[in-house]
Amino acid sequence: VTGLVNSCINQRVDSYLLTGKLDATDVTCGPHATPKP
Image (cartoon, rainbow, N blue to C red; front, side, top):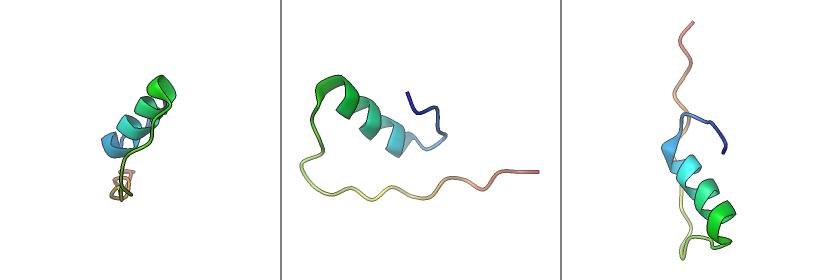
């Protein structure tokens, strides 16, 4: 849904939109990769 390159974020957003459930604990995702010119 988000179309971002960060799979950590994509998985959590998709899961929430499909099930309405949040992770049981706080999750910290790493930053997005720096785009190459």
